[in-house]
Image (cartoon, rainbow, N blue to C red; front, side):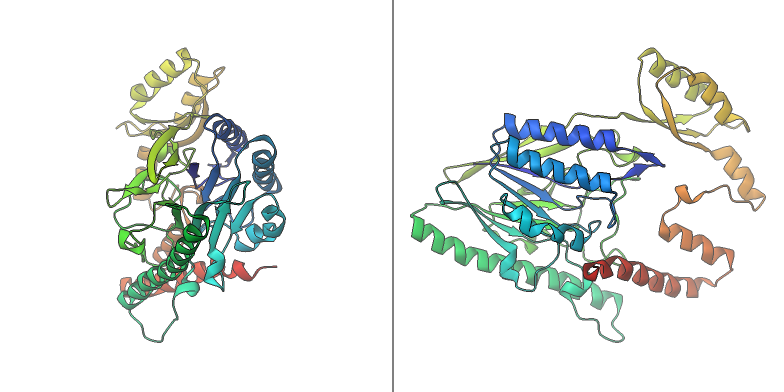
Length: 415
């Protein structure tokens, strides 16, 4: 039995205003061919299918077309999808019943009955192949009760305890089911796979990777003890860097399949194949091709133009992030760079002129734009602009983050 683990597609994500649908489509086409080539039996998608809770019609079309292609054009027998913190639970759950008829199982949000997060996958002969503990991203209200006057430390302990308890109950039920099924079908072993969308303690991230904090105040970074030892594999999503958790080979983040920002550009993206045979498993990373090169160039004018010339010679179609750090103030930097690459396939997504910014700041003028800032940084600028005292800033920031998180989490009740 072969399982393929992927996550964090972020369908619909843009890069400095540029739509990336050709990349997403190319990846999904490649994934279909990989499923065929590797003769994959089960596909696991560990959250963040979409980049926002309100994905475009085309982003949704890509998702459903892919699932249709898996069902019609491959021998993959099952697909399991869990919701991530970027996903709309109600959107994912809306098609749940229809997709189940195609052996595609969706768990968009924590279930009222935790047994519903345990999925038994069977082959064409109705013999169990695997048990999936399909735990989605657990929202704050799913795992703890808010109490008056609780400290940040109290909240963190409750979040971690709530996550552990959730996994304990789901996996305990799955284990009981595993024992019964093995006895009924006379199986020596029935693989049990955990899924999750969370931040494991010690996890690696990258600047500009778009990884959003799951809980207010960077809380609830869980350790490997959350996952029972009897799980044969744990397929995680949320972090975009492929990695093991606590050096445990069977607990893995597949990482995002395409670079979500220039900070990820040098990573070799991958999906993970897990081959189960005779109770043993072999994990094999499969490299994902780069469908759109991203290049960051940093230096003085000469240090920028020289690499650009080489890219032009190489007939590159890269998207560029350029940061000028030379001593000389060049007010027409953008014009010079555009003239230099004219006629090539290079495309500039962002130019950061540090000297101009420094000059503007010294004159109490900000040259930042909303594209340069996330929602937290925008609020920080607002606090600074209104001369809010430092001691009040921390309190207001906490309230702001609570509001932001509430707006995201309210979507579970959306119609």
